[in-house]
Structure formats: structure tokens, C-alpha cells
Length: 146
Image (cartoon, rainbow, N blue to C red):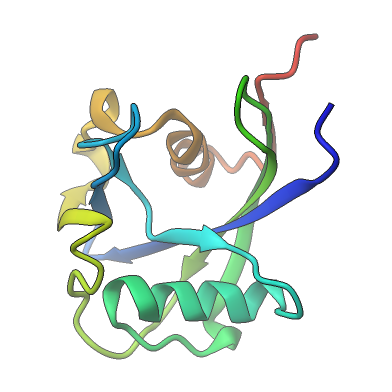
């Protein structure tokens, strides 16, 4: 049994009915799959501060924490990985143009129409949050046996 849960923050940037995704670069099964700008909460950091920090580190934008709207929480477990609680935020406004500031972790950034997402190429966990944005679902679980 896992002793702790990682807290992930995910950021949905939407402009003109398009969603920004990042193509993951890694040495695991997620290499080449799309993901939201996201990262882990650090010790001593608020969730809003983590979302703001991760967005700046990964894609170079500045977000006022007041412009974050929590819309979904996911409780996720998976064999061989730490259990996690994922918090998904919609961003109403930001400053700057998103750029790939972590080319060692991301091949590219790309805007996708909300009605034409590459769902077969998005990591399942963030895809659940993206779908929740469309459906209004506020909570989901992945990997738990019912």
C-alpha cells in the first residue's frame, strides 16, 4: 500500500475554442502522448501557487491565482505508480504566449479544437479531466476497483 498521495495540478488553457496540449518526452510508456501543462505540488506550496509555477516553468506564461478555477478532482491509482490526487484548473486569463520552455520534457506545444482533440493520443488521466471540463463532472476515480 502506498504511504502517500502525490498532488498533481493540471492547467487548461483555452483560447477561441482551442485547448493547449504538450507532447510528452519521456523514457516511459507516455512518451509521444499529449498531456496538459501540469506538475506536482511541492512541500510548503499552495495548490494555486503550484499551478501558477508549473505553467510558468513549462510554458512561460504568467497567471494570477485569482484567474484559476478548479473544475475537477481525480483520485488515481495505478500499478507501479504513486497514488495521486489530480486537481484540474481552467485558466480564465494569462499573460504571455505559451512556448515550450522544457524541451527535455516536451516535444512540442499545440492548440487543438475542443471538438477535435487527439483523444487516442492523450494520456488517459488528463483526458478524464478534459472530458470533465466538457461534461461538468467535478470528481472521478481511475484505477479503483468497485
